Length: 371
Image (cartoon, rainbow, N blue to C red; front, top):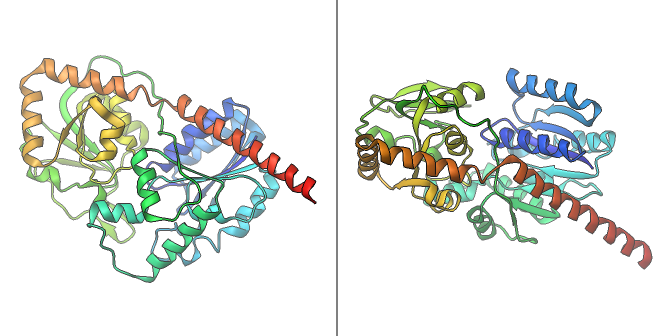
């Protein structure tokens, strides 16, 4: 199976596509990975070079430098990308398109087209701004781009039931979303060297991360905050008291930090899945999560939940004063995290892709007989 896959370099989409591509290679697929928006970092380019060495002509990578569909200058998001994506599909001999942007569901390709919904602006606004957004031109364009892409896609995937329901509430869908949880595979955390410290990680400039919450918490041990503080003209302006803001870390450095830490605090008020707490739990951290439906769906009894600064204060006090309780919390988080493997995720996607190809073949035969 030859797959044209789009990705981007903001947030966890890149990590998701790395894991998925690796799994698809093991199923004898070929992948042309196209990064939309800002060019990949040197570390991501190195990963692409490694994939080319490992998989030869079964892997190809390219960047199409156009705005993402949720950007303010999104008038070019689809229009300027379409010619190059169509050309790449033809050159690569793509048999299926898997897009991690909504708008490319509308690409006029005579192959199955699968869209994964990692998040969307309207569900973000409902969680972060009580649904209120200024009616700027970019928002109208965004709504039109997303609606058309979802309408013309052959299948839609969401990482949680919560995200699937939110998408159905905000857009008129032709297909009910298929829920395939994200997955991550890391080496088991090694014993020793763990400190009584907490980590929170994510895009610190994004309101969804609710990064102001720890500012009102009395931490009985160090809090380390990792993540980009600026994106374009948007930047983090909140002071976090005595927390240490580390800024953006490489993937390897972030994983090292998780392996050295006892706790991961996920303060997000909008998190359709959440790869950072998953990585932290796989590294041995106990997950403390803001009590929202999507995180409850993912973590169930594998996380401890808080809903404001006082409840987080109480959780931290209990864990700090009781090492046995902390160990139990770490074990529960680790056990839940191990359910979300990359192998399971890529296997479910591969099955969906196969079904889409079969359905397209049957539809083509029916059309031929009808003529």
